[in-house]
Length: 102
Image (cartoon, rainbow, N blue to C red; front, side, top):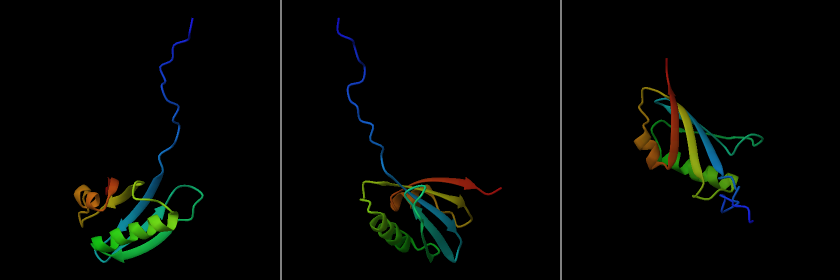
């Protein structure tokens, strides 16, 4: 008798991730990029609310870490009063989680 199997593929490839942390203020956004533990982060700043600058820094960080556009950007930040939203972050191509103050 042949054994039955439920697994039809053996794909154990992990999906690469690209992490971005942000500290937001009205004057300046501080950005940190990494691909995970053991990798020195890329630290940059852009003027507050400068979405073009944010997108440019994401592109430059992708180049720095040798990542293509298919690699997702996971981001976290502290939700502050300047209201950086899921919609705004989505336009930058990010998957976002945040924690609120208080």
